[in-house]
Length: 338
Image (cartoon, rainbow, N blue to C red; front, side, top):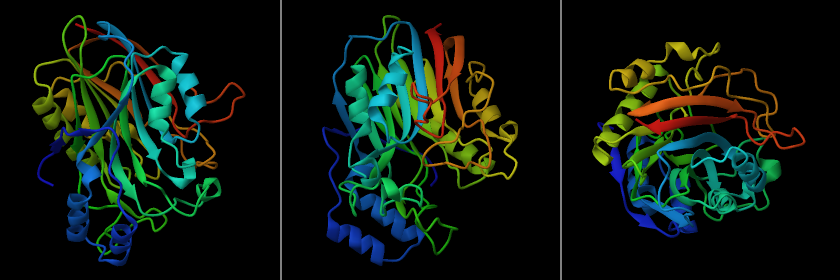
């Protein structure tokens, strides 16, 4: 993939892949060329689903933003409650199922947006061809997925002026078993991506981006994905303040994870982004789907350009009884348009 692909088409509901098409994918070749053909033929791979209700005409110039890898979205109501306690104006979510048996065929993005009184934009990272890994299958309510979507979202109290799905990779690292070491329990069409939204504020427009970079690779590939993302953001929303948030998988490929060695930090700094509004501490934890983690890592970040930095925190991703909601903590940041 030479550069990012940017898709700005929106729909109220993503079109599904029918059973015959899914079976043809499963029975066909598992290489890069086939993967790219599948991505091109699945309409939802180039669309953004939008829904929910805005509660304000514009975001305040001083605002709170949350970013969270929600690990499938097993607990939408509890997740919305945890978020609501921090009164975010914008929420950047990743690893959200839609129509997956392991999350009861629900649409966690829409449910969380409804619970927070927000508008949402959701895009597909992966079309899941299976039911999930060993720890996920006990949660399956059916032997099939009604939709099979897994992706990222932006939620906002104000309706975006425009939104975009930004594709960062199409090589098929989770599908092309003929060329890559693929997790057999998670056959998938798709690749890492981002959802961007241009939001109105009283001080001018603001671009917010929810992203999720590759875990099944090293620092150089994540840096290449970050570079594609920054190029795409510049095309989508030139000359406006930007905040990027999400799970960047920094150091996740190493036996002894060390986020400080990641190339993407300096790459973004060289293009005017600051990483200074991130709280110290690790951002992963034990969860129901990751019950015995072997490592604790710092994977989740904010990168900002053209904004004042007013503090950040890492919030334990647990319900009031202390039960985990995700294998990632919630990160919350306070920013203002400079």
